[in-house]
Length: 354
Image 1 (cartoon, rainbow, N blue to C red):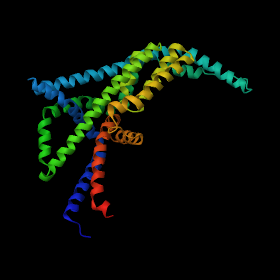
Image 2: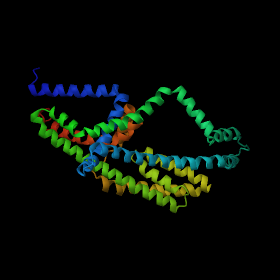
Image 3: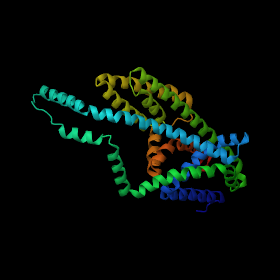
Image 4: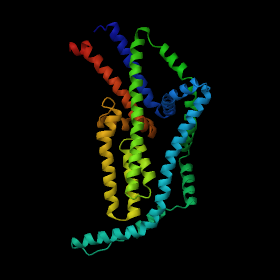
């Protein structure tokens, strides 16, 4: 079969795209810091440009943007640490009473079924108490032991923590030139179409990021206030963490729910904690899925739950935990690509004459 010149060009582009995807799958760990740095540079570039218009040198503006982002990330990390440092000592103290109550409940249920027995939970008590011990020396020895056995992994993590800000800084310094050089490689007759396509991608990604940030802030305020009104002593840090963690679908909500149940069980030691958490998180989930997300993100950006799960698994497999964080923004861009691909397919001879 004789291929036309147009089809030959399309096959070449398809081969190049498949080759790039194959290479990305092989070099996932190497490409990860560059991908993260480019994503951060894309998000911080407008702020650096605005600072430059205010006569602040571009290197200074890039450094300020990276420092401010680091402060925000450290603040989120400190919330997690504050919740853990407040909850684990309480849990260690309450282990004997919780296990005693569990033993009484299990014995009562067994008696109702006609079995007269008691459950020996001493070994579990010792294991939980040792695991939740707040001895800093023991934690330090465990960290050092882990570093000795998995030193290469630790070095990779520490290296990425240093490399990603450096790469982001250089991307921000040369962002405009990098975009111009990339654009100059595009064939002349495709530049207008590409510019319109990239403009659509930029618009939908910008709306997605702004909407997602608004959703996170609203949910953080709701969960913090609701848990505080329900009487939770750790309501503020747990609520803020849950709201901010919804950026990672299912995982963030699940972690916040688990922390709230744990804190409530330690504080109240009654079924009130379960009911309070169920009401607060149930209302929050309904409000997010039915009101907040549709209004702030819109139907054009909303992703199907099956696609969300696929993106989380695929990007997590390729790039690790950072890939999970980047999965949904990539999904928003993927929607634009799929929409243009389907439009081209419906206008092609393959669809019309097939």
